[in-house]
Image (cartoon, rainbow, N blue to C red; front, side):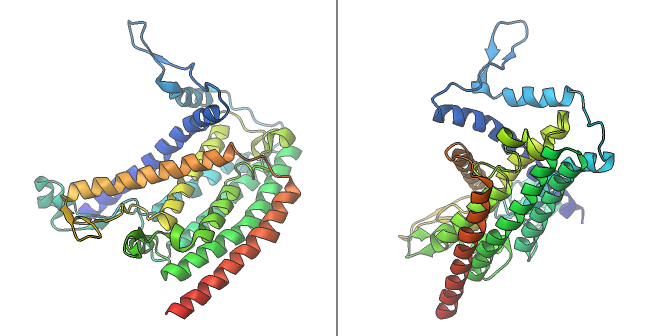
Length: 378
């Protein structure tokens, strides 16, 4: 139906704009937040001058991201003397595309009924309702794990095709790191599946819309606090961020697997890292922080524990849900950046030992305890 096509095209446009917009914002947050933590001023030199005036718009350094993007687009694309042309050019896109696809199964709002937004839309949409999710799949968790495993192929191709020892070593580190921490992440996600009883991310969010003890939101961080820590740690490791940035490790490998890349190909690797921060934050919010849920908010308005209600129009509910999800994702991303600027980098042997000897046994123990509690309470 044409109505469905219009809605899902709008969803896809919003999802891409959401990821690219927040990822660009995080490049600025990375600079300013690290500056605040180190008692520095941070980026503040780039500005836009209002034409025919001497007024300079600095905006706390927000324009530095625009300047960086323009610089990468305009720089010459250098390539190594000997390299595999096809794989070298394919790698940046293979690293970025799976990250974008993961967001397709993440619900960013509740149920949208376009006919209730404006009277003019009712004639076109009727009473149709749509879950605010690009792809509503029953096996959402499996899709997340599948796509997240594909992204490492871009990193491996980049290191191998560059014909550079530093690039190849960075790619080998990235592959072994992904295998090590993917196991812990998978076990943490299985614990959630056992708790929620579903693989569907939207159903997980709806499960968290309830209350614990009559007042506390039934978020995953309260029902599965250890799984929250395990998932966050493994996700940061898979994103190759400090303290797990051994595949890049500027002090040892120049730039790791993308040492030989320049111009926008290098920019795509760097942007995909920030997009992954957005995606990890969105998954963290969806599975552990109630997703788009605001405590006591339902599709009809607020229902408080004491029995009081506050009815809201459908447009207000939709905006509150989308805004709640946006704010939670931004805060979760800022927390990841805070970790990046707080902890020192592991040695490689420490990184592997931490993944296999500490994180994985802890994730397995959490799964066993979760399964026993679930069996006991059913």
